Image (cartoon, rainbow, N blue to C red):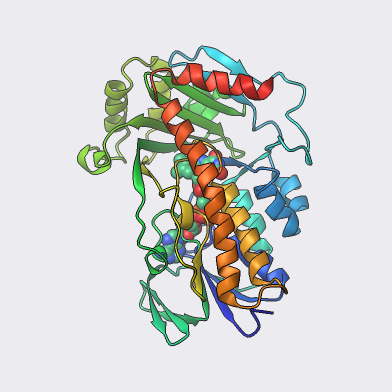
Length: 388
Ligand SMILES: Cc1cc2nc3c(=O)[nH]c(=O)nc-3n(C[C@H](O)[C@H](O)[C@H](O)COP(=O)(O)OP(=O)(O)OC[C@H]3O[C@@H](n4cnc5c(N)ncnc54)[C@H](O)[C@@H]3O)c2cc1C
């Protein structure tokens, strides 16, 4: 096997990195995951994710984790309401008999990020993940890599997989290609006990998802299994907004004042999202990697997930693509038919580049469409097309 006697370092323990670690361990590879979080509970994990038949679910099945997924997914959390800025409902699948079953191509079951991470972490051999390992750089030494951590420690590996997300520290060692600004910035927040802290939105949510569109702006809300809700407001602005706004994102009053001005045509019911005092808001400037990106494969380093193809979240593909990358890279690296590591990495990267052209195009199309003056109408047309 190509990975015989090779030490593999996966940088980043997100869905992509952990799925890859599991798949490679099943094939007997020597893997470590270096993750900057202090421990497995070190951070509130974001919104729910829908996994797709041909990507996220397929990777979990190959990883032998589909049963664990089935006991942790949230039936009916995929139910969606599409509303306007006044919460008038234009699309609602809460009353449909079923949203599908495992095995159906269109079934997209939801799982919270926290439980997904737990399933993946628990599937790994003890001590596979080295927590509190914030990588700051790499040094190439002969045929190996020296990994340099923020805390001054170092480690050595033969092969590096950058799975460290949107602002990857590994990506510059693979390519100098930079992302471009999508034109949209989002502000994300989480409200615990939404029934108490945001009752009207909680009621509208019905344990599922809301997509609200109006005035070229969006608000996406999803219910989480712990009774909290996660939301992000997305609007068109310049790439410097986050640093120039002057808002203290820990101060909900300041954030609410901004929302009232920016979303001035939106009903006051949305103010509930900014009423819970302890919400810390996370602003995110949404970038996208160039759709035609390509680079020459190397022998001992590559990228998966957002590190390879960061894009806005408006097609629900990010996690699914990260997990499919993990599956295809694991297959390439452990294939008996591929004769050397460079060819294995090149074969994986070719599939990843080709897929990103399609998915990235769809994502940018949705992102622009949803933040256009006719966003609601166009999104409804899309949904009606799918359901006919
Ligand atoms: C608001 C929002 C909503 C989204 N909604 C969806 C959705 O509904 N469906 C969907 O499919 N996708 C969604 N996405 C996209 C999705 O979150 C990403 O595409 C996905 O998480 C990528 O997985 P990953 O494993 O590549 O990277 P990540 O999930 O970003 O994981 C990277 C990991 O690397 C670690 N790390 C980062 N830097 C370092 C470092 N220097 N050293 C060590 N460790 C490091 C991080 O702590 C993290 O654990 C959304 C994104 C956003 C911003």
